[in-house]
Every structure is written in structure tokens, then in C-alpha cells.
Length: 222
Ligand SMILES: *Cc1c(COP(=O)(O)O)cnc(C)c1O
View 1 (cartoon, rainbow, N blue to C red):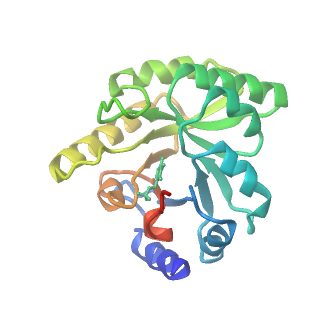
View 2: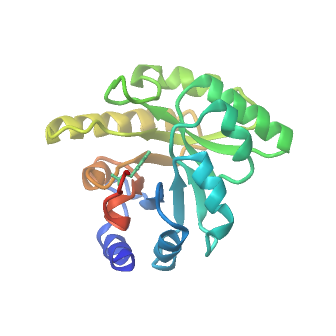
């Protein structure tokens, strides 16, 4: 099924969003086996995103086809050291002290790490990230850290059924992204959209979507 799902998605995901930017598919691989992930890569997935450091470490050497490695989950500061030099893009930089730790460890390793600043667009207590109004301040502060490159913003829309409200929030994210892009020249990714809402997100200007269920099927938490 995975191969069919990926082929169907790659055909379905528009070549470009309304702003004319290519839309990048990141496979959200939490709880998936290396075999399943490798099948998705074989079918055309070019980037994979992990949530858990332990899983990332266990699977790291078992992944074939040299995809981009992204980290998309909440990241504990004390686990940053396991990821340095192995992650092409950190989506979930949701607090300043995480950025500091990423910068410190990257500098010590002699590398620059690429990050996205996570915005809590729905102001949800259960989600991490800066408030939309804090986005500029956060980017300006983080940009002063030496070994990081801020490549854009990441957000998760709330799980609500109100499509008009979801569009409003996704459009707000795009406006903030455009506003900041004018001042942060390395901005190129707006990572927004999961299996349930990616179409709406791309229509509102997302250029990077993170899909799990629609590639691998439902996850079994047990
Ligand atoms: C799990 C996860 C996704 C993918 O979720 P699906 O609904 O299965 O597509 C995307 N982003 C993050 C941060 C995730 O943790």
C-alpha cells in the first residue's frame, strides 16, 4: 500500500503552491519500521521526518536511498547532542533555549544547522511554539546565535472542523512568513500541513507538508 499511497500523493500534491513555489513532501515516520520507510523512499519520498530521538538513532543506519533527514517533533534540550550533524532541517524549534543548545552544539561540531521556528498558531496549551506576535522577536534573537540558519517557519493547525477558521490561521501563517522573508533572506520553507489538512495548507501558501497517515496508514499506539 505504501508505494501506491506515495505515488498517488506525489501525483496529487500540486507542483507549486499559489505563490509558485515547489511543495516538498516530508514523510512523518514516527513508529514506522525501517522497511516501511525504505519502501516510501523507493516510491519517491525524498525527505523523512522523525519525532523521537531514540527512534531516530535506532533507525538511522537502516534507512536507504539517502533521503534528507528532518526532525519534526518536540526536542528535549538534553537530547540535542545525539542529532547534531545528522539532521538536515529541524522543524520544531519552539523555544529560545533549544535554539541556544542547537547553536552551541553545532558550533562545537564546526557546522551550521538549518532550523525552522515553530509557531503555535492556534494558541493551544498542548502545543509548543512561539505566539504569532512573538515570531519576529524570536527570529531576531535566534538569528544572533552563531551556528544556526533560520530557513523559515513551522506550524501545526489545531484539530478543529471549522474550515474557515483553519484557512484564516493558515493564511495568517503565510502572511507572517512573507513579512519575515523580507528581512531573513534564508527563509524558504513554510512547513505546515499534515494528512488531514495539507490541501488547505498548500492552498493557503504552505510549501512543505509533513504526512504520516496518508503514506503509512493509521498508527497503532499500543
Ligand atoms: C505525526 C506528525 C505529522 C504527520 O501526521 P499525520 O496526521 O499522520 O499526517 C506531522 N507533523 C508532526 C510534527 C507530527 O508529529
